[in-house]
Image 1 (cartoon, rainbow, N blue to C red):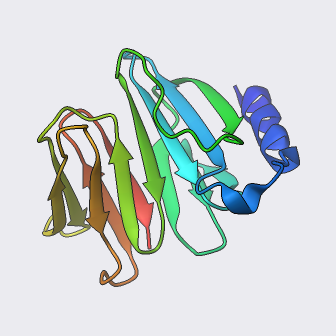
Image 2 (image 1 turned 60 degrees about the vertical axis):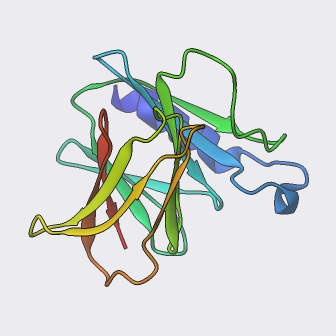
Length: 161
């Protein structure tokens, strides 16, 4: 598994997109889990990945990081989004998650699904509800630096601000 992950990171390090300044989220990492779910993490800048104690941490220069446990991961796929296409028709089992220092954007949820952000003390510090198209944006600009958990009805992930 480590060799596979290192290969993905090598590809990540060499991905060059033409006209990247015109594309909002050119780096997409899709994580497929043992329970059949797929989650896409979108990054505006090239992320760096680190691994420790079964946790993969993806971080960009802005300081925002996403962490997830590698125990349930069956595969990782890296895509350079040169076309800037954010929504692909399909079975809607995958979430597309974009994390910046100001907001967390999630696409692919069921309509009117709740999204909540919790601090490490379990307090809800931000929330949103997806629209009819399954799109939700949670404002995290005012949150203090720290580790937070984002929860949707079927997925959750940690991020570091």
